[in-house]
Image (cartoon, rainbow, N blue to C red; front, side, top):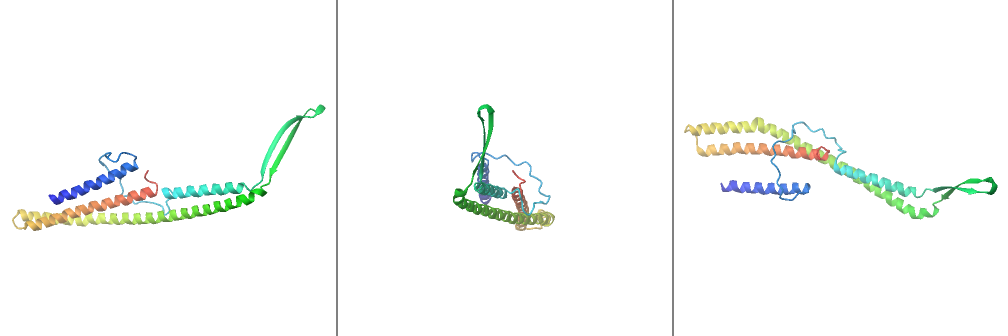
Length: 227
């Protein structure tokens, strides 16, 4: 009983830590309760995540940084172009009556070049850095998607192995040991050992299912499937 109480206490402490982290993400007090999970999503359908998830948060941020750098570079280059300032007015020239006057001023940016060229070079360097960050983000997301997909596939294979083989075999072994013990032919220590093996098989099955949900949630978050 003491050993069981120890494991339960560790489980409750781990759950409290996870709840506190969830509340932090939801901007709620750390001790806010999380309701009971009454149903889980269906994750049996294989994921069709692309090799380069365009909806990944990091990729979207990197692309936004590239777009911002491109606008800054375009703005810096625009300052090197001549400025045209049109103007118009009406004037009276004696008996000729009112006269419409049009004027266009051209500001040649010869004096701006020395000032703007360093800014342009800085903007070009910023753009190149942003593009490198985008390529790095896409590569990292591709690698993470591949890793999570592999973990999910492995978990699914193990789930099938436990459901179709290990759990039924351990159940049959435990049932046989229990029948023998009740009939007076078996040893109690063998019964306990077979029970522990049966229980461990079910625990491992639950862990494999949890691994599959973890990998699925990671893939959904990377590919934009989760909010």
